[in-house]
Image (cartoon, rainbow, N blue to C red; front, top):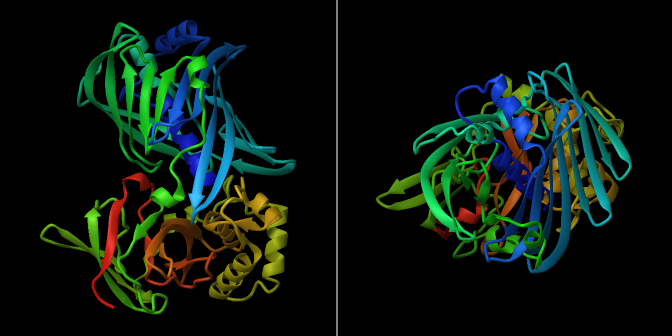
Length: 483
């Protein structure tokens, strides 16, 4: 659940902050924006797919000494249902950016604070000469992370609003490009928006012209649609099955109720009959019944889509020799320490020493021991809401996301590349559930393993999805073709 909330927060920020045009802004453009936009703030109501108002967001930017401050805060009232077990939680979040107000307008400080009931997670990151010094405080437990070679400028962050403030006219078909950064790795991501159309509507009796902008799917995540006035005011955006609308402060905080898309609503795919010997079979063919898009299922030698006329079949095989080969870049990326994976932390290394007293065993044996440890250590719970790996170690409870996070951290700390993946897993009845597991590098190939169910390797009924799938758009089921 926490991952779902953090993803929502991340994309609410990327939408508001990052529309941008393909050419550079001048110092004069930025100075004019700083002089005329201090104190600018906006309030938004957040609605779920059924129309319930489940939260609000507030944006505010202003000058403070030699810094330009951008602050975002919000609250979400989320009700979830997993196998008919209902939970209700209030999530409050605050995000703060400090940019130097002088050229090159670099990000000098970044902060996120997330609160659930009395639990608080705080990340504070100072940036100096390209070095990020991040301190994570989770209910008093401190972890420090250093990340090198980072630079981010306000001139990238807010290009569209500055351009529109300066009366720049965009036309349908324009490609709008910008950079953003990942809050975990501080990697820069390249994003693209496209102007779809220019429309007009009346708001409180006033005729308003606005752009319809499509943010394309990218390495950062899902695509979505936004509506921005010609003077740079965000009116609305639609992310997955959420709708965010510009409102007054009083309207935004009025009539909140618990809601949102539940796991039972969007995390389950039906199959028409039981799959016999699901954990041991070597092949399986499923008819895809409903609306299918190639963006959903990850394709490789063990997972393929066969198209016959207007129908789609999913063909699954279990051939360990066909696991994906690993590249040098993938090894480097999936060995490093990040905010989410504090592999050099003393608590993590002490736990690893307990699991692996003998460091001379093979990588395959290390993975097996860590997998078994995580499987036995974490008690299954759908309502744990752990902020990070330290929460998991303390509470010893979690769902598949907690299992995958702890496993990933420990395996990387042992010197083996590991990554989290997601997709579908069979429940031994007539359902596939959305699920998270891991892939580790053994003998230069990505081997799928599941610390929630202690699979090594996973059976063919673990169906890997592509990254950044919008589950609200998954509208198909399976039918058995062969047993």
